Length: 400
Image 1 (cartoon, rainbow, N blue to C red):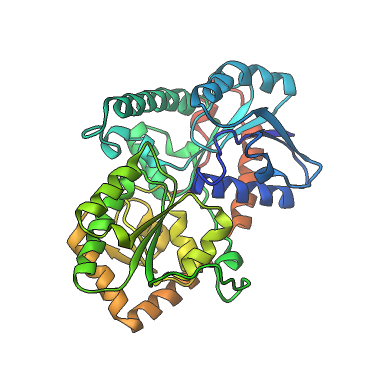
Image 2 (cartoon, one colour):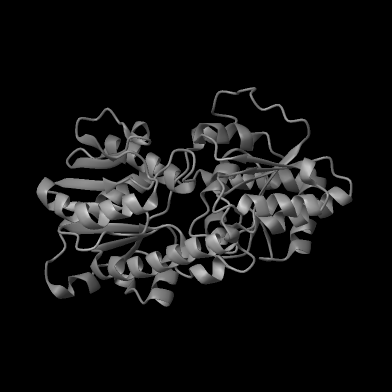
């Protein structure tokens, strides 16, 4: 069986968790799938990320890069359906929630970004310039339309958490029997300070609190900055390290918020960094915070736990599901409560040590190997799907 994976959206060091997810998945598929053949659709810019050395995996460069977006979308809409037929593809896999129209073969799609289910709520247009509002409106319209045809034609729908599965059912009306939950994993040995080779490249001028997130508005980083400012006023010596790519110029808004609070010199934006640097950056942190209002999974939470860092999360969306009681919860959107929780963990060494141990234990429960094995089952199941019109409403789910 030939399986085609669309990796065109990945921009090295800019796609965040989506890149981490797909790179780790492909590496494990190459290790564990001994029967199927894979065709990776890549760009010249991201090809190196998906080279496996496995003769059953072909990486085919079809675009120079993921940008501009219109060129990638035009290729997926106009050329890809015909090419899938021409190449004799049996199953087409879309890792980022959107299928091209009229896929001529079986298909599997992963939903791993819940902001596109309710884009207007999570990405407000108020306060943005005219050009930014136009770009965001275009993105909203594209995803709204693409979701409809994706959900109409996908043979299998892969949700990365039960929270995501529930949102697909309740917000978009997807039959729960079509949805399979497969968790993402974490490379525990790469992140654990006890397992990986120690490095000395991080030499911060002060102890720091870290967050890892592409700078989407739903990540609530401006609220994290506000909570951090309260702690600075109380005399903590820490810096706030923000690791993640900009998104539609949102970083400039966050930098302005830090300046207005008088803490600009204590807030460091690292931008998108190579994923191989993140274990080192996390392990040197005294605290990790992810204060999102909506998350489909929250992979950086597991990575911070594996790195032995105490974790604070909002009590929102999939974060409590993934943390599983191994992180400290705070009320979503409540800046005062977040500041209180941060101060509590930083001041109480026993509490921080407990969170570290709970986190390491929780992170060990998530494996990319298991993710890949479940994915292979999904692909094989999609290939065996009946061709009857009713087939897309009778698939056995696994998230109830």
